[in-house]
Length: 513
Image (cartoon, rainbow, N blue to C red; front, side):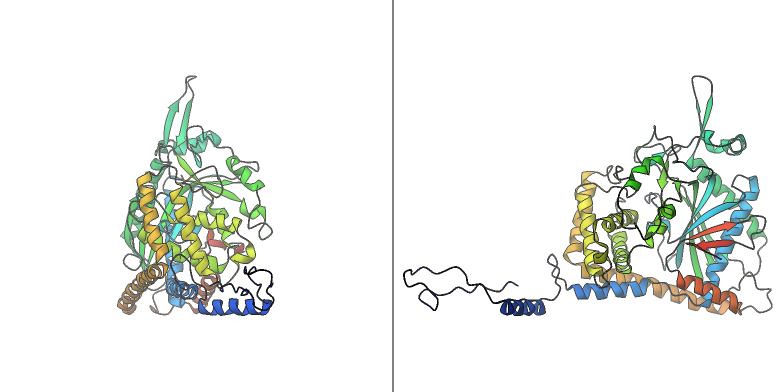
């Protein structure tokens, strides 16, 4: 609070005898001014102007949310994660053998968090609603290339003539005759005037084929159950995403499996982004950032669902995440938990929009400011402000292709509805953080209750020969626990040989195992 100005009285010491008018305000001695400022700071420590919330209290709430939201892995949980992963990769190896459509040597991208968590830019309005604690305990997204184009070193030019920005059709002319022959039943066909036939890879038909193939394989697997094999609790197709929930021991794992097209290199439409300055400059190399991209099965607001794919930079985002400070990530996770509940209806804002805003903030703000460990509250309030600003202006540029506005299609009624909801959050962020904490605590209680029920009948690892049902291999468990605890939230690229699914090789960032 500003100190009141002190004015010399007329006729007082130092006043001119020839004038009865008061002089200008006397300047305070530096020591007095500093003392008053210190007093004001002590009286009003770190208040948020808009809500009146204490910044220190918000920081504590964000830290509490992080503690409850963070997954804890003991040896048994680590082994269950490994068992579920092996099952999914074995299943995909069998899918490849069905009709040889999938590449023999394939490279998957495994992301921590499901599609509903915004790890990939996909439309959420077609997804079934799953809740942590009620339906699953841990969630992952697995990008599975149906096609790969990895033999080009120059910028990749896509056929975007029929699509909105960030979207493209994919002609199989880019591939050999064998590929066209295998996949033509998953294409839409366009005949040209000159008599030539063009096959366009259809995301909806590919997703239908993928779901049918997975269903066939799972049916065969369940006919011959093996000891220690995960229980398939649910298999559902939502739009172009296949969601599988596995019961493994006392854990339930949700895998959102997404068929994609994988490219090495960088799309020509995003070349200008590389010319700009970014927060990751000097922290990671450009080669790491532009190692590849995907086409994911999602279309624009007015696009054709059976033909249009969306550009995804999920591989690059894995690298950029390494350059984001822990305090900003804590604020992001807390903000995401708030908006997922608050802005769920109507579907307009996804966690991916919030992730994009965070990346833009990293470019906009000084690195030493974002590195402050006790600034999580400031970052949370800033993300809410940014999101509200984007809604009011109906403008959220894609981080990699800024000319693409991801909110352009929303109606004025929808954006104002969500902006008003965010205004309530901004007026009382502490209350909404408390609500988010209560939700995650309730989810944890459900998980613990199910674990207690299942502890007596814990499912052993597939590696077990059945002689000792409750004793996992200590060495394997310790190794798995080390990988999980040392790499929280990181994404894993997996290399698998379908002829030998017992030996997957996977990479966490740049480490191979």
